[in-house]
Image (cartoon, rainbow, N blue to C red; front, side, top):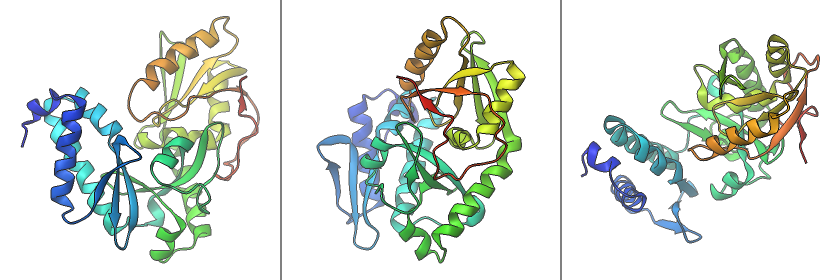
Length: 281
């Protein structure tokens, strides 16, 4: 067993080997294999739960930049979530939310894009239903919610209502020499990009800033980022911001949208694409 300080000093390959060792010890007897020749994506096959994909990429990145005290905790949490995944996630209708994930992420995670709980999203994203599991977040499938005794329609409705209840938590922060406005949910940072489902939030933020049109992006899961499009160098500012964010963990979308302020004042179904999100050519 490595100490916290030793763990953070390892190479990515060594950290991966350490995590795999921990997973095998926590999940004895279950086949754990590299997926499609990609060393940071592992396939876990359970006789009842079926095939699951464990993505180690974000974890390895976070361990390498973590403080010594948190490195071991990050690995412990990941292993615990893997154990939970085998048992199946708990589905509490008070803790489900509409979310967004990159299409490639869904494929790498072995998630079907045809599942009734997966829908169209803006740009390179698809809409999903996320379940807060305490230590982490699970992407729900129709089979999961039916096994828990729920109907997909009830879960979708609950997810939308729960997101509305969180809107008072919205937090705006100016970054990049005050050129980028990042909108997030203060107590639920992993739901930041779900604000794309609420165009009125974006419009209200633009009103407060005095902006009529913005470049809008969601390069990470924590926030929706806005740049005033009336600036002559707006595209350069957003490009620089995107490159910085996409170099870190938990990346989300590589697309930049053009968004104009409007009077929309309701939450659209998380399975509908917001028509005001127009992809830039």
